[in-house]
Length: 276
Image (cartoon, rainbow, N blue to C red; front, side):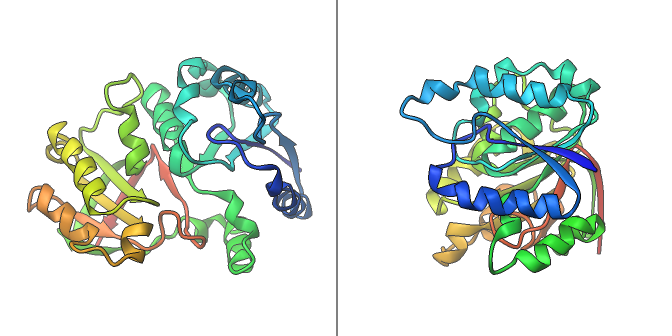
């Protein structure tokens, strides 16, 4: 039996999510998983009841459990970076567990890679119980080869190779100026977003350009930009990115990374090779 843990290192879930939580645990149990839940999943009247230090300590308890193989974060939002200063990265380094999360958990995933060169997975297991996609998502999750098998379209260039960093563009930039921001030399930068339209994306891309990121990396993987695509913003994200980056920087686009309910997974902190 595979032992796993479920945490919420970013914003709390509302009590209304309890029914979905039960469905998710049922799925894991049906597939021979033993599931342990964090004490700090749900919201309370006082935000400090689940302070960053408390959430970090709970996370460290799970990384300290040598029987736990994977830790799934089912939250998102704004608050994940609050726990970074309380994380014991030596514990994570010596643990056999892999951290999974997306969106705001971009901060924790990249911090783990930056501090100890350990890869994590950009993915939201909460989607496994989505009524529209659960059949295909659950099959992919059990068959991990299909979960990580992404389809790409080249926008510029014909080859991308390097260690993957990044994730949600807004949340990734929260690491700027901190000890948790990765060295961008020769990296492959994955970018996606739930919210934000053209002004916000120009802001984020301007910051990356000012940091010299686009002159350091080996390429960009563009996932989905949910609000921009829903609103059919013009210019679109591909056009914006091409405006900010060197003309010889390889770029690929995929619909399979991001906040779509049927999104697939990608390793952050592992090398990737994409060729035409």
